[in-house]
Image 1 (cartoon, rainbow, N blue to C red):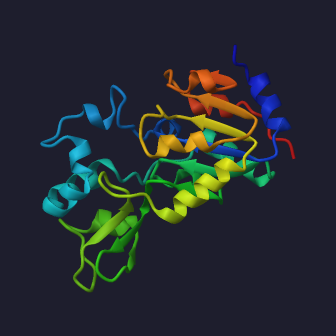
Image 2: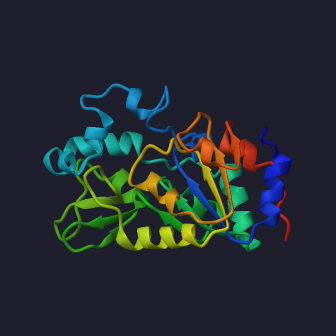
Image 3: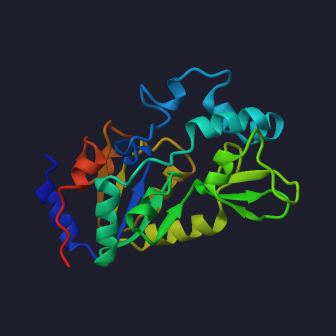
Length: 241
């Protein structure tokens, strides 16, 4: 049976922890995931969310893309939860070497984490497709219809849409962190979204901890499994200098 005491012992004995997280890390901050009962996949729109959030849809139906994006993907009032905070504390003590996240909300950095590999990008970064000028998320929110740069180009969120490839430098950094870690904490992810879910196969360290509300295909490979909310589990840890 998984207990906080067992997790605490693993943390205390670790020297290079990597945290691999998915949507379930941010749901406790009020950000819906895609596949839960009340997630975006189960809400009604003219098009399925997975189609709207594709490169093809962005190119062909740009106005509709931004209407959905502003309504459902921009979260300005959400704050880090105990999971984000605890991970930042673990990094400050030198226990945690990196966070690898599938989330695009920037809450890890808001909590104080410095070494964060955002596999799917971030809503906080937006660039002109023509001249690459940077724009804030507020610019996207406050613009009407399709946001345009001063040069006339379309300003696109720096998020990885369906049909797009992950950033090579982010992938390389994340894989290196996972390969060199002695403990891997996997949390808030169903481990069904590829290629990101395949990253954990590169782990060669000692302990794997899995925290997810529902069972995953990787439960049998973990040393410790919690079927609980991520923040509720991590929030109980003591961070020792």
